[in-house]
Structure formats: C-alpha cells, structure tokens
Image (cartoon, rainbow, N blue to C red; front, side):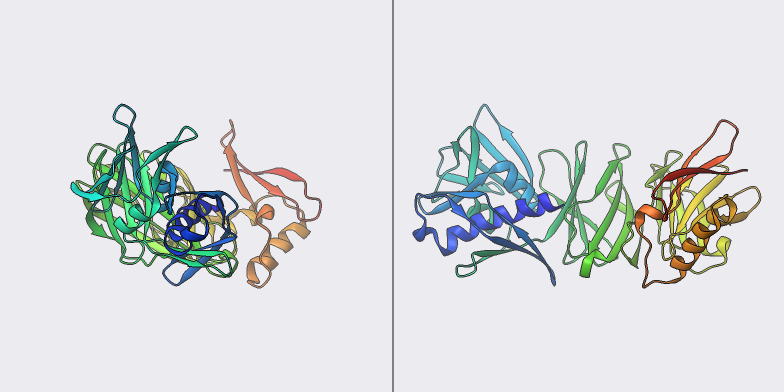
Length: 383
C-alpha cells in the first residue's frame, strides 16, 4: 500500500512541479520531501525521494507510473510509439514526438511531447492531471506536494472497475475502453486505492473491498457486490473499529459471498442466491461476524470484537467457541476470554486461534501461538 501511495505522490509531484516551480529547476532533477494524498477529508503522508524529470519547464513521468498514480488503464503500442490511458469517461492518446494529443478523440496541443528517456516512455503529467480533473498543490517552503485522488480501481482479465470515492458510483470498462457508470455502491468510501475483482463469466463479476482509515488504521469498511449484465444485482457492507484485519473469505463452493457481518448470502455466477444465513440468529448474539471457512458440513466464523473463533455445525445446528472446546492450557483460555471482553486491551493478532485444516479422520485442527511461550501448537476439535 505504501508503494502505491508513493507512486500517487510521485505523479502529483510532477504536476505540481509543472505549476509551481518549473522556472527554479529548469534542466534539473528535483527531489520532493513529502507528498500528501487527499481523499475526501482524509490525508495520507508519504515520503518521496525520487528525482523528477523536467523538460521545457514541464514535468514528465513514465506512463506506467502515471497510470498507477491516477488509477488509469495504460496501453502502449510499440509499433506506433503511442500511449493510451483510460479512465472513467476518459480516453487519452499521446504519441512520442507529437505535439498533438487526443482526449476523447478531440485533438489538443501539448507544450511538451511524450518522449523516451533512458529506455522508458515519459509523458507530461500536467496534461494528464488536467484531463482527469485531479488537483496538485506545491508548498515551496515545506517542499511538500498535495494531490487529490478520486477513484479506486480493480481489474481482472479484460474487465476494469472504478469506484468514485466522492459519490460511490461504480464504473466499468472492457479492454481498450473508457469507463462508464453502471450503478452506485451504498457505502461511503474515502481512501480506498484498489480493490478485488473476479470476472465470474463473460457477463458477471464479483467485487470485494476493504478500506482502512482513521487514527492508527482502526476504522475498517468492508463490502462486496456482484455485477451481472452491467447491473448491480446485490451488495452489502459493514463497518468495524479495531486493529484486527477483516478476514472474510470471498468464495466458497464456487459461490461468492455477500455479507453485512450479520447476514450472509452465497450467490452463483448468475447472481442467484444459493444459501442465506442469519449469523446473529444462529449465534444468538448481535455481533459482526467474519466468515472464514464454509462447506456443506460446517462454517467457521470469527466474532470481530472479541476475535473468538466459532465452528457452526449445520447438522447439529450448533455453534461452538473453539477456545472452549480445544485443550488449551487454562491460562491461555483465561487470556483469550479476558482480552476478548476488554476492548482497551486488544490481543496481538499473532495470538488468536486460527483454523488449520480437516485431517484424514474428519477432525478439525486449529493453530494457536501461546501468549506465554510464543510457541505455535496444533489443537484438535473432534467432530
């Protein structure tokens, strides 16, 4: 994540240099101290030490890094020496050495052309930033750049999706196309950089995202959606507070999972619900649950707040807390129970019970790293 943020900062820096201090550094490389990435009300600080190339008072950056920074799809035609960049409702085309670029097929004059430098193709940042309506601000005294970021992006095979962090609008594009809006997510995002996309078939895709923000990265927003024939068929999301990661699986038994942490649905690639589970009803506790394993016999849930692991047996219609049903030393059980009830003393993520596998006898095996010895042992929960 840090590397991606640095790339965004790098691009921002290029645009900024072009605006604010090109005259000071004509013909020189530039080192920028810090870059602030702004997404909504959130700000992320990254250090940037790479030099910036300036040509005729304009900043240029390799096309691949421009694409990463602004979340644009990038295509390079080696034969014609032409770069293509695609975003939401945007197609940008630039050819090495040409002073004419095209934005959505409209010709536009360039003050500096795309060029090959040290074997890499560089393009002018200001032009791309302006075309994609992103802003960059340079603080000459602090040597700090601030850049806006509007879209998160995710791709799989020939499909690319974008999420507008200001509006929640979801856009989609096939290969060599600009993105068009197909729907809107019903959750608020602000700092998401990229997200998971799985192309289920020629007509359907699955999307899953996990956003981390807030002080010390304690605010989590997790969601999923399924798109069929360019329509949002189903979606769900939930928010949690804590240092722990969101550990939901994305697929089970060839189905994708849509969950708000209290209910879970398994849908096939056509978007039809195959299984629906009321998680709070079967557990009898109104909490947020992560779904970490699922098959026809059992599923494994993790209660987010306590991080306690649960095995739910579909035949017996019974949920069992793993720490109560395996042969942990008494002091380890006491530790897990005490910390699970005290939100001001979150356990280290190393010291939680993890599902391992089902052995040849049909027994469920779990791993636990002792808080006292730091040694990892395997424990059996007989079924």
